[in-house]
Image (tube, rainbow, N blue to C red; front, side, top):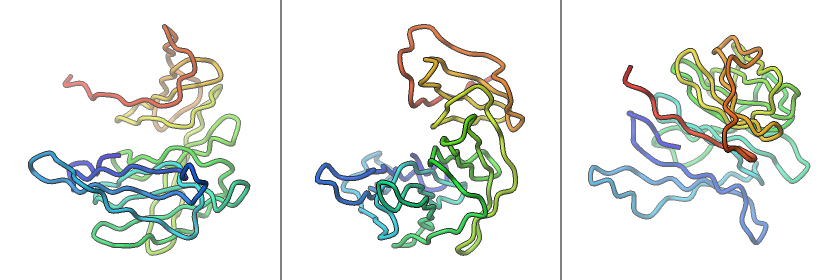
Length: 194
């Protein structure tokens, strides 16, 4: 996930290693020649699985995951310029961690363990994250998603569709894309110039 206009950094989550060691984040620092070079690896002993990551508008990196295979949900932030994660206590239980994304005003986090899934908007201060709103995507099984203004787009592996919903209203998908899809799991959208 790119650090956006603030830093241009690239973060890659390594859910866990093939030798079954805990996950980590590889953070590639941007330089003006568009070469990222060797990453700095960040880990946190609270995590075993690091699933999704996303930057906010200030370049802070948020990560979600689990403490172990059947463990507890974990949410943490790597503040811009910091060398270590701060674990966040979220005032909302999460069944299965989903995508994390900045929506232009708030960080968002999906709970893909709910049926239908819910995307929570939250703020973070210190070691506390507070939910300020939610969006339910009816009739879907979205894990990762893309938000752009008043639209949210998400792949639906169970139905082999990509749904398009109003944001933050959610509800039933306004449109679906089905052509040529098998089991979609991730996506990205190139913003239009219109």
